[in-house]
Image (tube, helix red, strand yellow):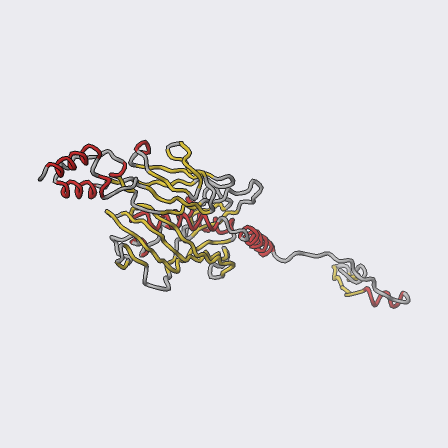
Length: 350
């Protein structure tokens, strides 16, 4: 190595070699649905969506970001800023320098995603009526076996993948019930064949059964954690509490959720939480449930009784009056003889 090359290496050591292969600090675009949310990291305001977030050392490796907007619940985005050791090692091998250089530089970190959209959920109105809705476990009726990809490879419902719970979705009702807390839907888990379940149906008048129709993921995966968009189609089917084979109303939903380093056991849980919160924002659903409750109450009480004023009966004389008003003649037998009586109506009504 000549003297010029030697001094060039010394200069690189002094200024840090990491920027050679990674010239930018770790950054990502943060969106919200709807836009206009204020972003806070560790309680410090960092901007308004859509915005470019740049990681700083004060944020810590485990970043917790809050998005706040008037009229909406606060949403939280959590992710981990990983080491970008590959850049550091490449620099070291390229320049034949020690590996321990620039380890604390922000450029030695990576976020694991470039863009994400965080959903915001509406707060219920103060005067919004609350409805009791029993929730049954989700049915899986996929129209397509293609569930998407992870790192370009096809996904299935295997036990090591993100859709491992599709075979037995018994816990889905509890997930939906938890997601709907704080909304106008007073969701309760329905247990089929139990006295408590029958009582819930009697009170709620309906039974909500979600049906999963389609999944389409475009994920990246690292150590069992998935990032990327997940599209899903879910039918929210409202069945009669009296006759569970009778469909009263259906809310078809197509929704998308961006995941960031979500563990494979939480992928379906996060999707159901998101979809349930979107269901609570349906502007027509409160009126639909109110109508169902009204009809169920009337059906349980029977038909309403209407009282009408009877029409007067016309007759010309006393003889006509008796024949018109007398409906029957009764004979009463006694030990001393017998007697007769007349059954007379008031204007022709008994």
